[in-house]
Image (cartoon, rainbow, N blue to C red; front, side, top):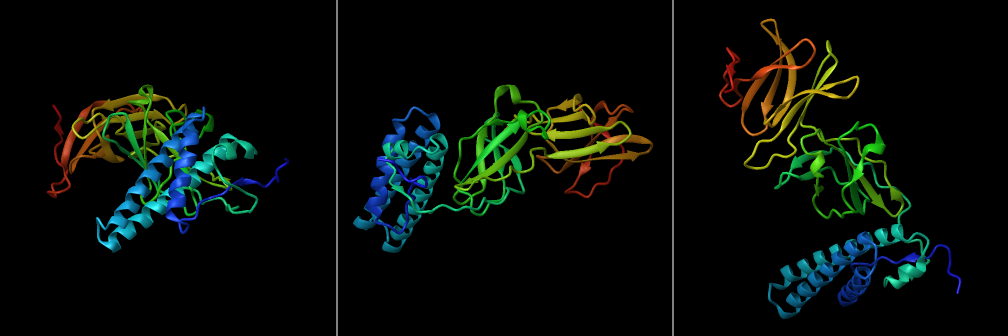
Length: 322
């Protein structure tokens, strides 16, 4: 039988019967886990977990294992999150199998011809930054939540950040419930290089414009040599300082020099006593350091300790780091 062109998967309403929501999550989760597409399978796992969580919360409420008010609030939150997960699963399924309601139905989704999805793109993601994760190759992207977004994707590059063709996708669509951060794994051959990140918000209207590239902690520029100084902490962890300060030719984009083993931020170029120096703060302590710069923009010698921001000590004679 020919289907209406507008037919698509129907979203769940968190105000519907809890058992119906739980059962629908479980049914679709099981069928998505049987699909050959890895992204669809991943959403199936999420739905199954949501179904289990809602079931446990509902049992707790019914058996009075928690106070009635607390149990009811927990169940409401878990049900709402389950409906969000279901909506994200619809997005993945419809993106994987566009204009294919037969496959959506085979995956267990109820179909509708109602225009239930938003036709407005979510706002562009702004105020992005990255932080080191628990492991050397784990990174955390932080950003402001985009109102109206159902999920987000993250792309990274170690090439020219203005060249969209150089980015690789490191996450399948991920939901954000209360916090605007996503962790992801950086490929081994990307470690030790300046990393740039873009985040894109998604909803049923489509993908919003990607965020502006972000990712560096410190940035400074020496106009005489057209040299850009960039700091990164990629590869560092709680116990090991593996950050790098790069000197980059602003014309060619090539790295011309680097200092390793330093997590630096707040960089700036100044002239002290006739010497051209790059000043920077430690990302781990209140210490301030500097390093001499050659006329061509390369580094000259080792970084030197200048003072601490928590003692009020003024810059005097530099102390060479041994």
